[in-house]
Amino acid sequence: MITDFMRGFDAIRFVRERLGFHPDRMQQIVLCPGIRRGLLNCSRQWGKSTVTAAKAVHCAWSNPESLVLVASPGMRQTEEFLRKSSAFVRRLGLPVRGDGSNPHSLQFPNGSRIVGIPGTPDTVRGFSAVSLMLIDEAAWVSDELYQAVGPMLAVSDGDLWLISTPNGPRGFFYEEWTNGGDVWTRVRVPASQFNRIPRRFLDEQRASIGERAFSQEYECEFVGAEGSLFHLDTVRRAIDPQLKALELEERW
Image (cartoon, rainbow, N blue to C red):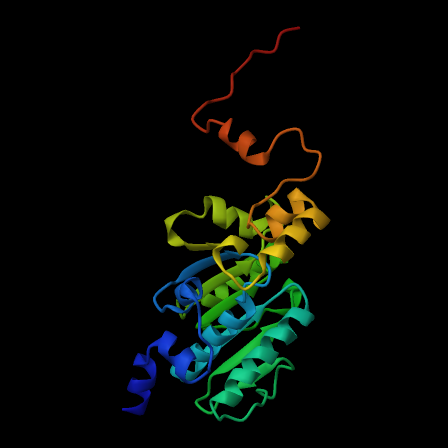
């Protein structure tokens, strides 16, 4: 009965009442159960690490023996994620301890784990039956790592979330956002849609870092390389996949 209650506990109510975190409207979308493939394209300082850490803790707490994997470009981001997750675990009144095998991990009394893995494809293999996969700063993670972690969701049919600020029109995060199809739930949160960053600071940032960098960091735009003659989207729209190449006979 306790297990059934835990599994049915509403995620948003859980993070409010048990974790002391009050998500805004867009953060509630990330917390909602039932999204198998999610893309979160958000501004800097929106709170993506906090809301995804809450999502990871809820998944581990409510699903005994579950495995949550968190990948990021470097261990600094992974350590920050585990630090926020540990704070939530303490609010649940649970001991904060590792799983004994992985240096960046949290073990729950119900057998669930949250494990942070490095951004190197050669060192992440070996995990299986993953319930929830979170790829933080996905725009800076290599395509090779993305390909390496995909099979870990096969047996469990686990959920996958890619979370990032854009890093130009390149890589799997951009490709899934642009061409990934209806399988993905896309959540875009520019700085203009939340009030945690003062307008004065945004104006200062725009003047300081320039329009191109500001569009990417705070407006969630996939900005092409500076100095490019044509925008990549313009090139894509000019291509007709239905056209066939001309077959020309070689003549001497």
